[in-house]
Image (cartoon, rainbow over all chains, first blue to last red; front, top):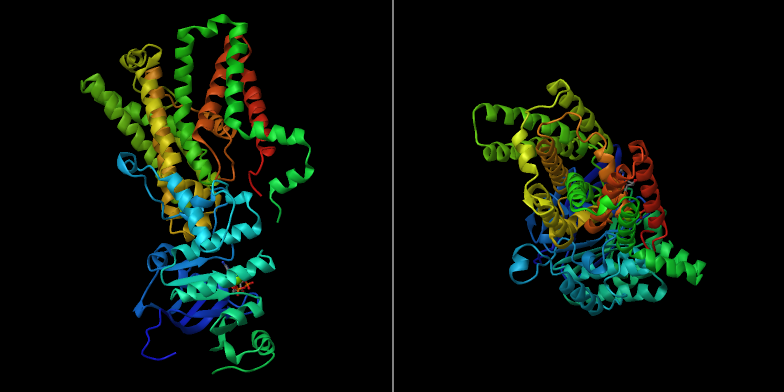
Length: 256
Length: 336
Ligand SMILES: Nc1ncnc2c1ncn2[C@@H]1O[C@H](COP(=O)(O)OP(=O)(O)OP(=O)(O)O)[C@@H](O)[C@H]1O
Ligand SMILES: [Mg+2]
């Protein structure tokens, strides 16, 4: 990456503890538009904690977060959404009792036109319709959007969540284990969706335990271990074995 | 992970499926039950069909409707408000003192009642705000927080009133009987508020947020909804509605009684559950709640009409809650 390029996201020395558990220790990295970054690490390495800091679910204890060169302090996930960052959370970001359409538009509901709209009536039909077409656009087909999410299979739910993230993201998409619950074919679909997002110039943070997927789709891979970044290199410099070794800490190849 | 649909479909017998599709429309079942009850009580005592009894039913229904609507919002948001009964008592008593003093200053009856309504709603809002702080700031679970205000409110109502009704106002009672046909003004006001809040729940962003928070509060927060502020507002709304119900009973009985609303929190919760809401949040309909409240009102009044000991009332209410719970458990695809 050339240095005159402005990173869309930059983390400097981010640390975060939950009580006595140190989930993140001095994490720093830069992410650029049009780049897919694989974020890998063992269970409990701090991946989800990291993305929750970036998306505003948690605030860091120390360190700085820059978006497009400007330091930001999120008060809530709402702020990061406004800044064009969409997140698919590992621990389900969908409301099971709401319809597919209601979930897609959650937090961004549109009102009807005219007097009823001014009285606060939501454009429920329009949103349901648009949700379906938008999901199809990103290559995800789901049953009629009037169904509630609780009536979908695990994979279909995951598809809706991915579709929502892709649909709204302006600058950054964060996907925390998006291929969870998915079969082989659907996983490939998700990888295609990620590649398409890169083509559109988005920055994608892709978290997964399926290393071949990460090696296949990402441009750069960041390895977290026990809350620290232990390696941050272009994907070409990894093999499955070296990646596994770095994740587990058995091979001591680090970049510091 | 298998959803309840999958498990039920794998059982497979078509009779079960047919039962599901009928029961799936719980509103329809409730309507049938309501009609059946009217016919049942009317058969036993034809006076049940008179317009004066209809008017009575409307009034009793109205005494329950506002807090049932409040409880619908709260329960769909994933909480519960046990304090709606004692809030009626404390607002009726507090409002009673205020109105007494206004009457002593020879204010016009309309002025007294209007200011009284504002004061009752205000006292309810204060109780609701206390609930909101206990839940969103002190992180108490709603059950405990509203149990605290339930006890505190009931206790304060008794202490301040020394157990006696406050602010004797016979003119209010006279006014409470006026209206259009069987619909008294009080009933018309309650139905209007209920309609507006019912529509708001199902068509507005505020209502949508309420369902989302009850269904998965993390998802709601992640979607940019200010969950704490919303929850706080729901308990304050509930408080206001309970306060207005206090005013309702002040007008009906012509004084603010500390005993009013003693078990009405449970009746309101029962109406919501019978109406098909899930106590775990995210699911419910205002029409269901109102049908539930209608059924409970008809049962309560009807039992008196056919000379059944009022003590049986609670048993019958319990039977209806149990029935509603059974209906819910065989309803398809409710939750996984
Ligand atoms: N809300 C929380 N409260 C307390 N501790 C937490 C919380 N969330 C995460 N942790 C702890 O922080 C550490 C990092 O967790 P995190 O969820 O970020 O890991 P992860 O890399 O996403 O793991 P996985 O691959 O299993 O999803 C773990 O030790 C975990 O137990
Ligand atoms: Mg994780």
